[in-house]
Length: 194
Image (tube, rainbow, N blue to C red; front, side, top):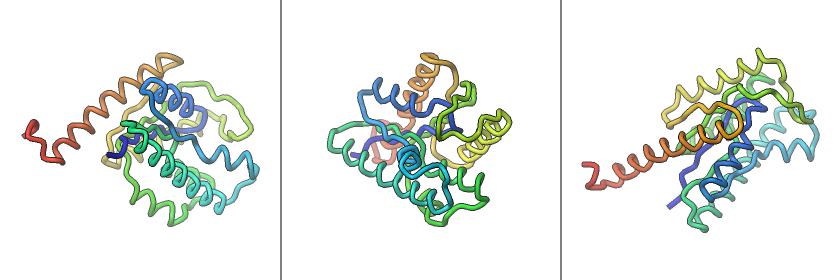
């Protein structure tokens, strides 16, 4: 059986990678890093729409590789640092359009839950981040929130500082995995839920 895939999304500098690492350590499992960081560090930050498509393809490839490894290792959970919703928001925010392949992949790929990181951490500058303005960060946060509201995969908002944020993530994962397990049991026709 494939692992339950939990995606962590949100604007830049909201602790997505740190949360993924902490949750993976807590649940003794793996997490998929954000492919965009590797790509931009290699190719530079002067990106175009075709670079975002390459990043999307790389993210999908990375997710599939980690998922296959998780199945082989018998891991029940896999945390994913961003998905194609992030590429879609990025594409539309910067270029006012999104490649059709990205949109098709969003429709085709399935995840079990999303954790949306709130903007309650201070923005930290690094060589890849672009939006320190709190108004833009809040706008992006609401774009992600609207996306999650309009789809049917379970999701939760995660906030707080340091260990408080990790604890909120753990509590959310415990809640959504219980929902996912109940749904999978019902779908499999488990007599215990009839």
